[in-house]
Length: 329
Image 1 (spheres, helix red, strand yellow):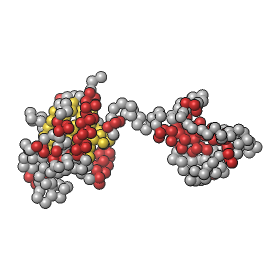
Image 2: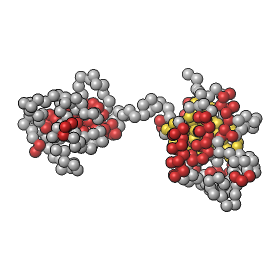
Image 3: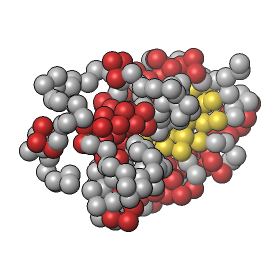
Image 4: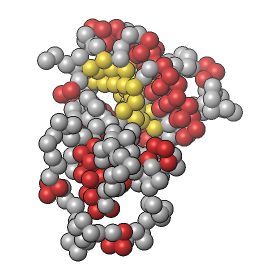
């Protein structure tokens, strides 16, 4: 299958890293993470493109009294070491490089061109790129503007959120909100390809969060009328006076099922409720098929106290709920 995705590495230059003229905290670490990511995932991309601020005389973009919104102290001066690519990125397999901002402010990589005068959009179209990922410095400014322009040009666009850093957290929040509202996808680099991409909300087998969801949201949730987050229900009509679902259906947030109870029927004893709820919860939390015949608890690494009496004669005195903050009954 032909590769159709491009990676744009935005302005990863010493001038924007610790020790530079316009340093962003975390810049050097971001450069190293980008380098590691590209080293491991270069084969996923049709091309890797870098952008650089490359200022000759950008006019009012520079100021002796900058407001750090529209005006800035001198930085990324063309031909200086600070304007070159960060050493962690310079050694990567780069297919094209564009420079921007020689004589005016330029935040988006799409304002830059390569040594042959080709603008970034032309480079990507010549490479038959169909999707774009964006990383670099700073998330709140040049990364955001580059991502938005990529989207406007028609490319589905992602920003790899752990491979960028904002000038400030406040500006970062604003940038992420703007990108989200525009339709730029924001994902962590570990989920950029493969296992997590299809359904990032699906539980991971063996993951602690899956087991916690199974017991908290499914098992004990159905026992005591809690929702998926473990909050106890107050609605006696829905759950009965002891928080047990009475209508024979599953808990609306993923719990067990006990069947219809007539007035003459006896309530299930506590042990039956516990084991039924735990089994149902494990099934819901681990996304087992609803058509599964049974759930074998031996397949799960669960420590059950063998001294607990699960016989029909068991009552609440056999169970210690002292470590539970809210009384379940």
